[in-house]
Length: 336
Image (tube, rainbow, N blue to C red; front, side, top):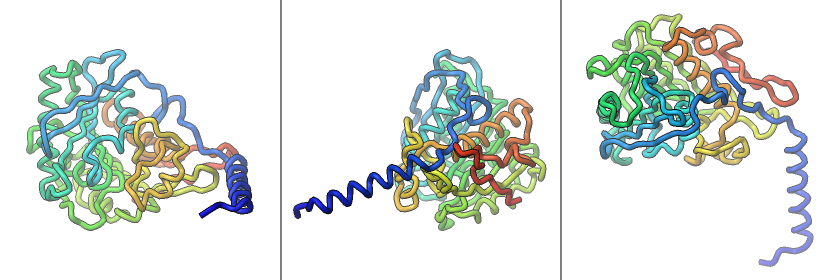
Protein backbone atom coordinates (compact mmCIF):
# COMPACT_ATOMS: atom_id res chain seq x y z
CA UNK A 1 0.00 0.00 0.00
CA UNK A 2 1.40 3.41 -0.94
CA UNK A 3 2.11 5.93 1.81
CA UNK A 4 0.37 9.25 1.22
CA UNK A 5 2.30 12.50 1.72
CA UNK A 6 -0.05 13.48 4.55
CA UNK A 7 0.68 10.22 6.36
CA UNK A 8 4.42 10.76 5.95
CA UNK A 9 4.12 14.33 7.22
CA UNK A 10 2.12 13.15 10.24
CA UNK A 11 4.67 10.47 11.07
CA UNK A 12 7.47 13.02 10.77
CA UNK A 13 5.76 15.40 13.19
CA UNK A 14 5.14 12.52 15.61
CA UNK A 15 8.83 11.55 15.52
CA UNK A 16 9.91 15.16 16.03
CA UNK A 17 7.51 15.54 18.96
CA UNK A 18 8.82 12.38 20.62
CA UNK A 19 12.42 13.42 20.00
CA UNK A 20 11.74 16.88 21.41
CA UNK A 21 10.11 15.36 24.47
CA UNK A 22 13.10 13.09 25.01
CA UNK A 23 15.51 16.02 24.66
CA UNK A 24 13.58 18.06 27.21
CA UNK A 25 13.19 15.25 29.74
CA UNK A 26 15.73 14.86 32.54
CA UNK A 27 18.44 12.26 31.94
CA UNK A 28 19.12 9.43 34.40
CA UNK A 29 22.34 9.31 36.41
CA UNK A 30 25.56 8.22 34.80
CA UNK A 31 27.80 5.57 36.33
CA UNK A 32 29.64 6.97 39.36
CA UNK A 33 33.35 7.48 38.87
CA UNK A 34 34.36 5.58 41.99
CA UNK A 35 33.07 3.48 44.86
CA UNK A 36 30.73 0.48 44.70
CA UNK A 37 29.10 0.30 41.26
CA UNK A 38 31.60 2.78 39.90
CA UNK A 39 33.85 2.83 36.85
CA UNK A 40 37.23 2.96 38.63
CA UNK A 41 38.33 -0.43 37.33
CA UNK A 42 41.60 -2.09 38.28
CA UNK A 43 41.75 -4.31 35.19
CA UNK A 44 41.34 -3.47 31.54
CA UNK A 45 40.39 -6.80 30.02
CA UNK A 46 38.20 -9.84 30.74
CA UNK A 47 39.34 -13.32 29.71
CA UNK A 48 36.69 -16.01 29.23
CA UNK A 49 37.29 -19.74 29.64
CA UNK A 50 34.96 -22.74 29.59
CA UNK A 51 35.26 -25.91 31.64
CA UNK A 52 33.36 -29.19 31.49
CA UNK A 53 30.41 -30.11 29.33
CA UNK A 54 26.67 -29.96 29.55
CA UNK A 55 24.78 -29.14 32.71
CA UNK A 56 27.79 -29.62 35.00
CA UNK A 57 30.02 -27.30 33.00
CA UNK A 58 30.78 -23.66 33.68
CA UNK A 59 32.27 -20.48 32.27
CA UNK A 60 35.13 -18.84 34.15
CA UNK A 61 35.88 -15.12 33.73
CA UNK A 62 39.27 -13.76 34.73
CA UNK A 63 40.72 -10.25 34.88
CA UNK A 64 43.75 -9.37 32.79
CA UNK A 65 45.84 -6.29 32.00
CA UNK A 66 47.48 -6.57 34.45
CA UNK A 67 47.31 -10.23 35.41
CA UNK A 68 46.50 -10.66 39.13
CA UNK A 69 47.64 -13.37 41.53
CA UNK A 70 45.08 -14.56 44.12
CA UNK A 71 41.73 -12.75 44.05
CA UNK A 72 38.15 -13.26 45.32
CA UNK A 73 35.61 -15.47 43.59
CA UNK A 74 32.01 -14.57 42.72
CA UNK A 75 29.71 -17.46 41.78
CA UNK A 76 27.06 -16.08 39.42
CA UNK A 77 23.91 -18.23 39.08
CA UNK A 78 21.85 -17.34 36.02
CA UNK A 79 18.12 -17.17 35.49
CA UNK A 80 16.00 -19.80 33.82
CA UNK A 81 17.23 -20.73 30.32
CA UNK A 82 20.19 -18.33 30.30
CA UNK A 83 22.36 -21.13 28.97
CA UNK A 84 25.15 -18.74 27.99
CA UNK A 85 26.45 -15.77 29.98
CA UNK A 86 25.48 -13.20 27.33
CA UNK A 87 22.40 -11.83 29.18
CA UNK A 88 24.59 -10.92 32.16
CA UNK A 89 27.79 -9.98 30.34
CA UNK A 90 27.78 -6.32 31.41
CA UNK A 91 27.47 -7.18 35.13
CA UNK A 92 30.04 -9.99 34.83
CA UNK A 93 32.53 -7.66 33.12
CA UNK A 94 32.01 -5.13 35.91
CA UNK A 95 32.70 -7.72 38.61
CA UNK A 96 35.78 -9.06 36.86
CA UNK A 97 37.32 -5.69 36.05
CA UNK A 98 36.95 -4.75 39.72
CA UNK A 99 39.20 -7.67 40.58
CA UNK A 100 37.13 -10.84 40.94
CA UNK A 101 37.06 -14.24 39.30
CA UNK A 102 33.49 -15.01 38.17
CA UNK A 103 32.28 -18.60 37.88
CA UNK A 104 29.08 -19.02 35.86
CA UNK A 105 27.80 -22.59 36.35
CA UNK A 106 25.63 -23.68 33.42
CA UNK A 107 23.45 -26.06 35.51
CA UNK A 108 21.01 -26.58 32.59
CA UNK A 109 21.84 -28.74 29.59
CA UNK A 110 18.66 -27.47 27.94
CA UNK A 111 15.14 -26.41 28.81
CA UNK A 112 14.44 -30.10 29.48
CA UNK A 113 16.84 -30.32 32.43
CA UNK A 114 14.73 -31.14 35.51
CA UNK A 115 14.71 -28.26 38.04
CA UNK A 116 15.39 -30.81 40.77
CA UNK A 117 18.89 -31.20 39.31
CA UNK A 118 19.77 -27.50 39.03
CA UNK A 119 21.49 -27.21 42.41
CA UNK A 120 23.47 -30.45 42.14
CA UNK A 121 24.62 -29.54 38.63
CA UNK A 122 25.65 -26.06 39.77
CA UNK A 123 27.61 -27.45 42.71
CA UNK A 124 29.45 -29.84 40.37
CA UNK A 125 30.31 -27.02 37.99
CA UNK A 126 31.51 -24.75 40.79
CA UNK A 127 33.61 -27.52 42.34
CA UNK A 128 35.30 -28.37 39.04
CA UNK A 129 35.98 -24.70 38.37
CA UNK A 130 37.53 -24.09 41.78
CA UNK A 131 39.69 -27.21 41.45
CA UNK A 132 40.99 -26.05 38.07
CA UNK A 133 41.66 -22.54 39.36
CA UNK A 134 43.43 -23.76 42.51
CA UNK A 135 45.63 -26.02 40.39
CA UNK A 136 46.78 -22.97 38.41
CA UNK A 137 45.19 -24.10 35.17
CA UNK A 138 44.19 -20.57 34.18
CA UNK A 139 47.06 -18.63 35.72
CA UNK A 140 44.95 -16.61 38.15
CA UNK A 141 44.44 -18.34 41.49
CA UNK A 142 41.31 -18.01 43.66
CA UNK A 143 41.36 -16.61 47.18
CA UNK A 144 39.21 -19.33 48.73
CA UNK A 145 38.72 -17.31 51.91
CA UNK A 146 36.80 -14.72 49.88
CA UNK A 147 33.96 -16.36 47.96
CA UNK A 148 30.49 -14.90 47.33
CA UNK A 149 27.41 -15.98 45.37
CA UNK A 150 24.99 -13.88 43.32
CA UNK A 151 21.87 -15.34 41.73
CA UNK A 152 19.09 -13.90 39.59
CA UNK A 153 15.63 -15.38 39.10
CA UNK A 154 15.86 -19.20 39.28
CA UNK A 155 19.54 -18.62 39.94
CA UNK A 156 18.64 -16.83 43.16
CA UNK A 157 17.26 -20.11 44.50
CA UNK A 158 20.32 -21.96 43.17
CA UNK A 159 22.73 -19.46 44.75
CA UNK A 160 20.98 -19.82 48.11
CA UNK A 161 21.32 -23.60 47.81
CA UNK A 162 25.03 -23.28 47.03
CA UNK A 163 25.51 -21.24 50.21
CA UNK A 164 23.57 -23.84 52.19
CA UNK A 165 25.36 -26.91 50.82
CA UNK A 166 28.90 -25.61 50.29
CA UNK A 167 30.25 -27.17 53.48
CA UNK A 168 28.65 -30.54 52.73
CA UNK A 169 30.29 -30.54 49.31
CA UNK A 170 33.70 -29.50 50.71
CA UNK A 171 33.52 -26.16 48.96
CA UNK A 172 34.68 -22.85 50.46
CA UNK A 173 32.22 -21.01 52.67
CA UNK A 174 30.06 -18.44 50.90
CA UNK A 175 30.80 -15.25 52.81
CA UNK A 176 28.20 -13.11 50.99
CA UNK A 177 24.97 -14.16 49.30
CA UNK A 178 22.96 -11.82 47.06
CA UNK A 179 19.63 -13.05 45.67
CA UNK A 180 18.11 -10.84 42.96
CA UNK A 181 14.43 -11.32 42.09
CA UNK A 182 14.73 -15.00 43.10
CA UNK A 183 12.21 -17.56 41.89
CA UNK A 184 10.70 -18.82 38.68
CA UNK A 185 7.20 -17.62 39.49
CA UNK A 186 5.76 -21.13 39.42
CA UNK A 187 7.59 -22.92 42.22
CA UNK A 188 9.29 -25.42 39.89
CA UNK A 189 12.77 -24.80 41.32
CA UNK A 190 12.99 -26.48 44.74
CA UNK A 191 14.41 -24.56 47.67
CA UNK A 192 17.15 -26.27 49.65
CA UNK A 193 17.24 -26.47 53.43
CA UNK A 194 18.67 -23.01 54.07
CA UNK A 195 19.04 -23.46 57.83
CA UNK A 196 22.57 -24.67 57.10
CA UNK A 197 23.69 -21.30 55.70
CA UNK A 198 26.31 -20.47 58.33
CA UNK A 199 25.97 -17.74 60.90
CA UNK A 200 28.11 -14.80 59.81
CA UNK A 201 27.07 -15.02 56.15
CA UNK A 202 25.96 -11.63 54.81
CA UNK A 203 22.60 -11.98 53.04
CA UNK A 204 21.08 -9.37 50.73
CA UNK A 205 17.91 -9.69 48.67
CA UNK A 206 16.60 -7.32 45.98
CA UNK A 207 13.16 -7.61 44.36
CA UNK A 208 11.59 -5.47 41.65
CA UNK A 209 8.36 -3.58 42.26
CA UNK A 210 7.32 -4.29 38.65
CA UNK A 211 8.58 -7.86 38.51
CA UNK A 212 5.51 -9.76 37.34
CA UNK A 213 7.31 -13.11 37.17
CA UNK A 214 8.95 -13.75 40.52
CA UNK A 215 7.55 -11.07 42.80
CA UNK A 216 8.80 -11.17 46.40
CA UNK A 217 7.42 -14.52 47.61
CA UNK A 218 10.55 -16.61 47.06
CA UNK A 219 12.80 -13.89 48.41
CA UNK A 220 10.80 -13.95 51.63
CA UNK A 221 11.03 -17.76 51.70
CA UNK A 222 14.81 -17.56 51.41
CA UNK A 223 15.02 -15.07 54.25
CA UNK A 224 12.68 -17.15 56.40
CA UNK A 225 14.71 -20.30 55.75
CA UNK A 226 18.12 -18.79 56.50
CA UNK A 227 17.51 -19.03 60.24
CA UNK A 228 21.19 -18.97 61.26
CA UNK A 229 21.84 -15.61 59.59
CA UNK A 230 21.60 -12.87 62.19
CA UNK A 231 19.15 -9.98 61.62
CA UNK A 232 22.02 -7.48 61.49
CA UNK A 233 23.62 -9.51 58.68
CA UNK A 234 20.63 -9.46 56.32
CA UNK A 235 18.52 -6.99 54.37
CA UNK A 236 15.67 -7.35 51.88
CA UNK A 237 15.09 -4.44 49.50
CA UNK A 238 12.53 -3.50 46.86
CA UNK A 239 13.61 -1.54 43.78
CA UNK A 240 11.03 0.82 42.23
CA UNK A 241 10.56 1.97 38.66
CA UNK A 242 10.98 5.66 37.91
CA UNK A 243 9.66 7.42 34.80
CA UNK A 244 10.57 10.97 35.86
CA UNK A 245 12.91 11.31 32.88
CA UNK A 246 14.03 9.46 29.76
CA UNK A 247 15.02 6.75 29.33
CA UNK A 248 12.68 5.55 32.06
CA UNK A 249 14.00 3.13 34.68
CA UNK A 250 11.88 -0.02 34.85
CA UNK A 251 12.33 -2.40 37.77
CA UNK A 252 10.96 -5.49 36.03
CA UNK A 253 12.24 -9.06 36.03
CA UNK A 254 14.86 -8.32 33.38
CA UNK A 255 16.26 -5.18 34.98
CA UNK A 256 19.51 -6.94 36.02
CA UNK A 257 20.24 -8.16 32.49
CA UNK A 258 22.37 -6.35 29.93
CA UNK A 259 24.69 -7.64 27.26
CA UNK A 260 28.24 -6.42 26.84
CA UNK A 261 28.30 -2.91 25.40
CA UNK A 262 24.69 -2.10 26.29
CA UNK A 263 23.98 1.47 27.37
CA UNK A 264 21.15 3.69 28.59
CA UNK A 265 19.66 3.99 25.10
CA UNK A 266 17.96 0.59 25.35
CA UNK A 267 14.69 2.03 26.62
CA UNK A 268 12.49 -0.06 24.36
CA UNK A 269 14.19 -3.29 25.45
CA UNK A 270 13.58 -2.33 29.08
CA UNK A 271 9.92 -1.57 28.44
CA UNK A 272 9.38 -4.79 26.50
CA UNK A 273 11.32 -6.86 29.01
CA UNK A 274 8.27 -8.46 30.58
CA UNK A 275 7.05 -9.65 27.20
CA UNK A 276 10.36 -11.01 25.92
CA UNK A 277 13.70 -12.29 27.10
CA UNK A 278 15.48 -9.45 25.36
CA UNK A 279 18.24 -7.94 27.45
CA UNK A 280 17.93 -4.40 28.69
CA UNK A 281 20.29 -1.49 28.97
CA UNK A 282 22.92 -0.75 31.57
CA UNK A 283 21.54 2.14 33.60
CA UNK A 284 21.12 3.58 37.08
CA UNK A 285 19.27 0.47 38.28
CA UNK A 286 22.55 -1.37 37.72
CA UNK A 287 25.11 1.23 38.80
CA UNK A 288 23.25 2.44 41.89
CA UNK A 289 21.23 -0.74 42.47
CA UNK A 290 22.38 -4.25 41.63
CA UNK A 291 26.05 -3.53 40.95
CA UNK A 292 26.54 -1.09 43.82
CA UNK A 293 24.83 -3.36 46.33
CA UNK A 294 26.75 -6.43 45.18
CA UNK A 295 30.09 -4.61 45.30
CA UNK A 296 29.38 -3.18 48.74
CA UNK A 297 28.20 -6.53 50.10
CA UNK A 298 31.34 -8.30 48.92
CA UNK A 299 33.58 -5.56 50.30
CA UNK A 300 31.89 -5.82 53.70
CA UNK A 301 32.19 -9.62 53.74
CA UNK A 302 35.72 -9.89 52.34
CA UNK A 303 37.49 -6.84 53.71
CA UNK A 304 35.42 -5.59 56.64
CA UNK A 305 34.35 -2.47 54.73
CA UNK A 306 31.45 -0.29 55.86
CA UNK A 307 28.34 -2.46 55.88
CA UNK A 308 25.84 0.37 55.55
CA UNK A 309 25.93 0.76 51.73
CA UNK A 310 24.81 -2.87 51.41
CA UNK A 311 22.95 -3.72 54.61
CA UNK A 312 21.94 -0.32 55.92
CA UNK A 313 20.31 1.24 57.65
CA UNK A 314 20.06 4.66 56.09
CA UNK A 315 20.40 6.54 52.83
CA UNK A 316 23.82 5.04 52.09
CA UNK A 317 21.93 1.83 51.31
CA UNK A 318 18.71 3.09 49.73
CA UNK A 319 19.81 6.05 47.57
CA UNK A 320 19.77 5.56 43.80
CA UNK A 321 21.39 8.73 42.50
CA UNK A 322 19.77 11.78 40.91
CA UNK A 323 18.20 12.70 37.58
CA UNK A 324 19.97 15.47 35.68
CA UNK A 325 17.52 18.04 37.11
CA UNK A 326 18.54 17.14 40.67
CA UNK A 327 15.44 15.08 41.51
CA UNK A 328 16.43 11.86 43.35
CA UNK A 329 15.73 8.57 41.59
CA UNK A 330 13.10 6.58 43.49
CA UNK A 331 15.00 5.08 46.44
CA UNK A 332 15.15 1.45 47.42
CA UNK A 333 12.61 0.39 50.03
CA UNK A 334 13.40 -1.96 52.90
CA UNK A 335 11.02 -4.90 53.27
CA UNK A 336 12.57 -6.37 56.41
